[in-house]
Image 1 (spheres, helix red, strand yellow):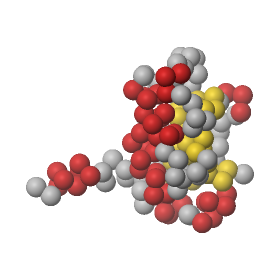
Image 2 (tube, rainbow, N blue to C red):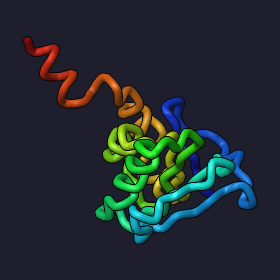
Image 3 (tube, rainbow, N blue to C red):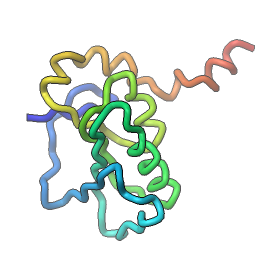
Length: 125
């Protein structure tokens, strides 16, 4: 069973397979022409060191995609703020990762809008 991470913590998965469009990290950015009827996209992260999914998410948002966007796979809690900033609404992890990185670690990064480098620069003046 997979665990869904949002700014509120661990949540149940309400998506059904039939309503989700899955994209792999190898998806060529120039092919991102998403049908407006699609409202749920999940992008796979085969490794925490593979950041191509962040680029795909950002490009989708820049091209006007306004549906739900989820990162799935090997995203670690330290990458949560980056996932949110690049356009993801949630992260889907497996139970073994949730056991190693419990909810409180993810929640400590849920205030992602206040803890970016620009905000720290503004508050240091």
